[in-house]
Image 1 (cartoon, one colour):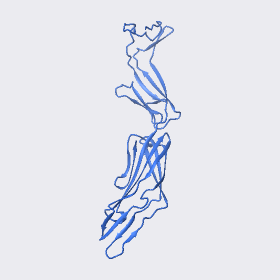
Image 2: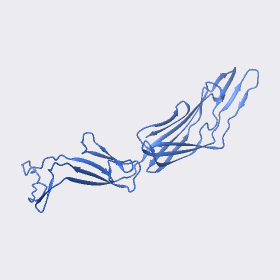
Image 3: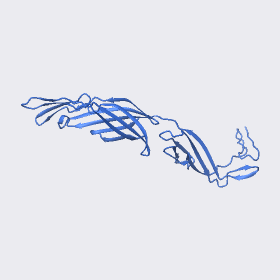
Image 4: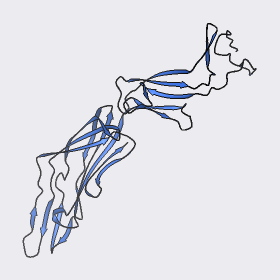
Length: 270
């Protein structure tokens, strides 16, 4: 197939399909490019960002959508091409016109993409029942799904509390600890919200946990020449609230506290 055009056309004909030379295609034109998202040079965290490919000399780029859907959800990507060294031109009424700048546009609709995490919180308390060398351990786990600004918490699980080294010697007495019915954590509800914030220049995931009915350990102490004593577990009927704030990203694990000592938590992308 051969495509021919009028002399005033600025697009030359294509070569022949069988390889027979036709009118030669124009040489590659050097140019400079600037990229914009909604008129913002290289975009930003609200409308999306332009990532320039290392080997592309600014001419090959990728659009990275923002974490939250912008309003409006359709963004405009534009490329401003300049510095053609006088080699790009067009014709109008048989007059040659040099082209110094070309702006190309592309509209992109940003849609929701789910972000999934697991949240783990644990407590390791030393001296269970006041006995050195005995530790009480408790943990709670849940799944968190974020779609835009909607947060859903599922599979909230309060794990069974345990005692590490439940029976130890202390001042000639034997102290035996057993976990209470619920342990340090008894999370009855977990909710989340997404806020426009500035943690690592990303939106913020706020997590609220309501802990109610937590219990202490059962303690049994046997000492020489005196009757054994029992300290039954005490259940706290009051509610306590734990708040957490995370940068909303699905590429890194976020942690707090010290694992194996006191309280510790982690948010892990799935």
